[in-house]
Length: 226
Image 1: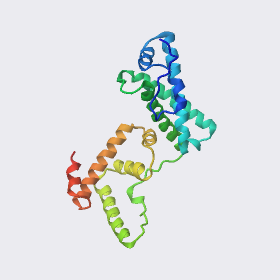
Image 2: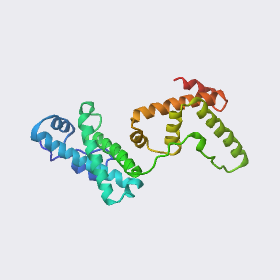
Image 3: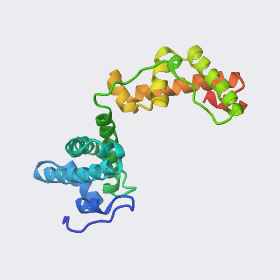
Image 4: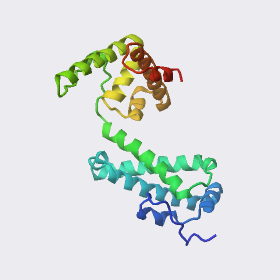
């Protein structure tokens, strides 16, 4: 099958990526599923697509731009390598609901986001603080300050009373200090899924506590058990 005719991709995929996606969707899957030279050429074409996707995404991220040209290129290639492996390992999940290049492009974006965050936090200390170390946020009026202070105090008490030390550290790191969850998982030697589970359990416990204290409506309390 000829690969000369290019199939248009979705509007959100940049024009610069279209040249790399010059195989019909079915041909992509067939060639990547084969062996020998045909597969090698398809993998090389896929990797080129992932490189283009990674460069496009890095260029849209302030953190990526701040990395500098050399480090940015390292991140692009690392993301493209990871994305290529991910696409190939998930070929069986491609259902053809979108064009193959559009589907694969998402892997390039996701892995680039991860690699940029890793690079941006490389060498930086990650503070695993407790809730006791957080300072109050100033507000614009005495009334708002009083209300915010009461709610903040209720949240602090809830985190101390109903969350485990690990749940508190993870919640503060991700929700307050805005540490990327994939970076935190890497530093703690765990997985994103495990940290998401920790955050889910922490939110559930905290919502129940705030509902019992009257800071959340009854409807929210009902949702806690879901």
